[in-house]
Length: 101
Image (cartoon, rainbow, N blue to C red; front, side, top):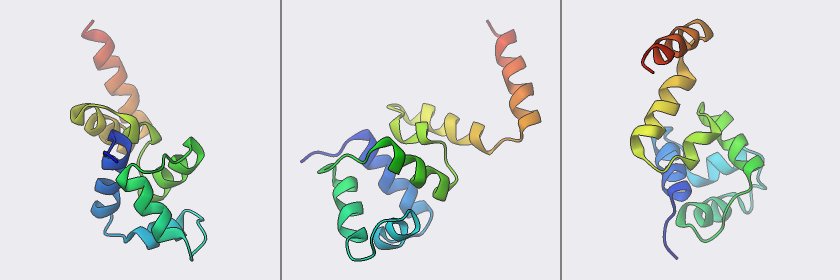
């Protein structure tokens, strides 16, 4: 089975958070007995997690869910950076971007 953008981003985000597959799985509500196996299957692209599970992962890791679906690395980075901004900074950035059109 080949890796997908989702599976690659999931593994990268988990490793950056310094969590094992089991730890992340348990934190997002998977049964402890199967948490590691399920996360491993998601990271290998053997199974595709549903959007609700990805939202739980995103919340746990402090990322937007869209990050996991971004096809390009620069888009994923942009989503991650935007997610970390304050609301005021987001508003300023949006005004700046609108001025570039």
